[in-house]
Every structure is written in structure tokens, then in C-alpha cells.
Image (cartoon, rainbow, N blue to C red; front, side, top):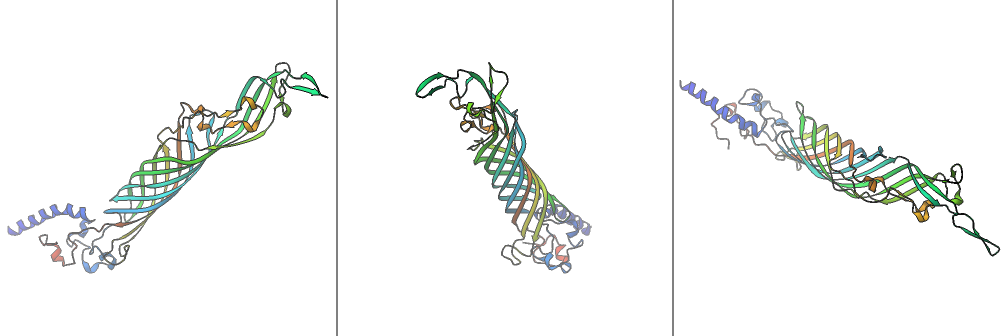
Amino acid sequence: MKHLYRTYGLLLVLLLVAPVLRAQTRISSENLLGAGGTNFSDKTPKEILDNNGLRTGQYSGEHHLVGAYLEGSYSSFVSNMPYAKMTPGGFGIGGGVVYEYQNSNFLLQTGFGITRQDVWTDILDTTITKYHTADAWTNSMVHQYGDWLGQIDTFYYDLVYDFYDRRDYSQMTYLQLPLYLGQQINGRAHSVGYYLVGVKLNWAWRGHTAVRATGNTVGIYDRYFGVFHEMDNHGLRKNVPIEREDEKLNFKLDVLAHAEIGWEYGIYSPERGWRGGPGARPFDMRLRLAAFCDFGILNINPGTTKRMVYPPDETRWDFPTYQFHHVYSTADMQSRYLRNMFVGVKLTCLFGLKRKEKCIICNPPFTEADMANPFRDRN
């Protein structure tokens, strides 16, 4: 009977202490109390170091990691502007520093980044008409040999502007603050991947814009048949290249929804810490390659009142005086939405130290009999 009570008591103690043991280190049933694999003589030096023979995984416990990332992406603006195309788009190149906290499979990541974005936006052909317009010779006076001959042209016409092959260019630099949550995707012995989701504050720091197009002007007179074109002396010109530069797009503060998923390769060295020696914490390095997507949650429409195309009345034939502004910085964007988008690949490198795990049955090795005695003081 006494042996029976002792057996029940031992089982009760095991049931009580087993969850505590598992919470403090990764211990499987085969490592407990001599049930295979706990004999000190069977361990390799690498297995014994720092954990006295109990195996702990690279991704168990609590980690603090720091590192850096580089990313490259296809980028464009998404809008419901009817005559601005999403294509051809452009690219984004960025990088930054990372801090990551890991507890078991849970990941929390933040940091600081900077991204350059170059985007080309094709614009549909634009036609503007100025009705009943004086041409370059209307109300002109001429004189010959000192005598005024009088007014030689009193005609008016409809002046038609045609701009085509227009492409608006934007180069922006953003400062970014990310906050992501995620999870490790573990294999049998190591991590095989991970995923992160979250948000990224995106502030338009600096940049510039440019507009490139080709222009024609033609005249339609009410007293002549046909359309008059390529008459430079009347201000009618053909296939004139146009290029204008302007300030950056004054986007509002943006919040990007972020998602990434990828592959991870871990380098773990329990015998070598930052300073080396058996007392050092395990060295931990992670290399990650992932696909990611950033998409704007907020409408970043600048809400300006600039004109997309404006030939001044006083210089209506003079192409160098025509005003052009990037389509997304004009009054034509009123009541429209505008969002940022990045889709690409990301390379991350992390370095960290794993906190030393406490194992309450891993004090300096004793015999199997000692390990089987649950009442022995281990402190």
C-alpha cells in the first residue's frame, strides 16, 4: 500500500510540474526522467553546451533581433481619374532598419525606412478650343515707305489645341514607419518561412514632377473652307515637343496596408555568442526572401487648383509659355481618389540573441536516479 501511495504521489507531482517544465524550455516526453535521450554520456559536446543535455530549438523562447532590409517593387498610382492611365507605372526602391521581437512563433516588427518611387502616368489626348480668337495678324497695321497702309487683317477664327503622347512623371522620396504582426512557419527542425501583416506610415518627404507631350494648333475660319494648320506666321504649329518641370506632388500623410510572406533561412550557433565562450548566449541570424504588397488605405489626393493645361490668352500662339502640371496635382482631381501601390520582393537580414532558457532539471548533471527524484532541491 505504501508503494502504491508513493507511485500515485509521484504521478501527481509529474502532472503538476510538467506544464511548468514545458513553459520554461522545449522538453518532449522522451527527455523526461530517463525515458530515452537524457543520459549525459550519450550527448555530444554541442548538445551539452549551455543546456546540460536538453535540446532547445532555435525558434523557441524569446528573441530580440535587429537588422536591415532592401526591397524593390513595381509601383503605380491607383485613381478614378478618367483620362489618366495606371500604366506604364514605374518602380520603387527602398531600405531601412528593423527591430523584431519574437516569442515562440509570434512576431512583432517595427523600424524605419526610406523609399524612392518613380512613376510614369500616360494621359489621354487633350483638345482645347478658344472660340472667336484673333490670330497673330488680326488688327495688324502695316506701313510702306513711311505711309500707313491701314489694317490688313480683321479676321477671327477658332483656335484648336491638340496635345497628344502626353506622359506625366513623378519622382518621390518617402519616409516610412512600419508596424507589423506575424508568425513563424516552422518545419521539423527549423523555420521554413514566415508572414507579416500590418500598416506603414508613409510621408512624402521630397520629389519633383515633369510633363512631356507633343502639341499642335490649327485654325478654323468661319469664312474659309477647311482647317488651316502649320502656318507659323499665324501661330499655327505642328508636332511641337513640350517639356515642363514642377514641384513634388504634395500628397497627404498616407497609411499603407502591408502584407508579406516568404522563405527564411536561419543560422544558429549555440556554441558561439557575441563574445564567445560557453557562457555566451546563442548567436542567431536570419536571412529572409519574401514577396510583399503595399496599398494605400487613405485618399492622398493633394486637392490643388492648378490647371492640367493652360495656354495664356495673351500668348496663345507661344508654346514656351503654355502651362502644364502633373495630372494628380490639378483641379481636375476634385472629388477623385488617389492611392499608392507597391508590389515586389524584399530581402531582410536579422541578427539576434536568444535569451538563455532556464531548465529546472538541468543543474550540473547528476545521475538518472537524481533526475528521477522529483523532491530533490534543484535551486
